[in-house]
Length: 267
Ligand SMILES: [Ca+2]
Picture 1: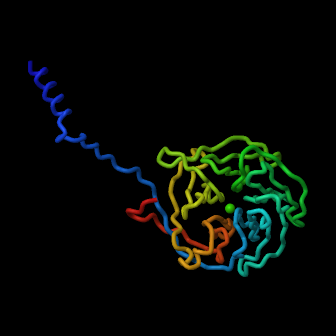
Picture 2: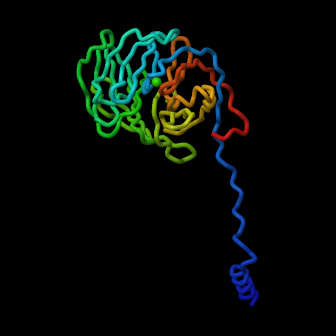
Picture 3: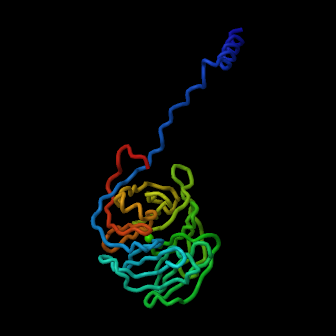
């Protein structure tokens, strides 16, 4: 009888418009360290460079750029921004990221499903390679090449054959992180610009899990920012432990220092 009465009361309660929905249980948001930055130095950057790839190897700054007609692979003087050597990609192609491996420069195109292989010294074109899907970013460690394709996956490539050997599913708090763009291997982590944001995610390559987010707001002044496209381009100078970032059509390239996680920041 008491059970029946309780059921009736619950049913009446559920039907009562005054009761409203039951309160949701309070669940703490997953914590994700959010890092900020300090600018160490500011250098000129070609405001016509639609940056798609950025790296430093053996002290040399390299940059690859995009859009049809302005796709270049360049050796750039870090301090002056001057172009030291350049390979102009056929204007029918939209260039993307790049990586240097031994005596070869390996590049991507956005939607042509092929990249170019250049001689590292002369920048002369030596050949092409092909892949399925889109090409966005490239980076490397000592063992392999990593490639982003606009999705939440990072492909692993054999550095000699450029054949795919596996994929990393990148997730943050269990959710896929799409639009991974320019890449950089930094101290055992893969760092990735997230397209159309001012964020870099730090990825554990073994698990694909994002372990922290670097927030790069306000690197440019609002006036400078109006004439530019998105943040894109990360270069880590391994020998000197220096970190550089820039963006598409940005007039400046920044050496930055990552600061401690911010309290209460929302990545
Ligand atoms: Ca890079």
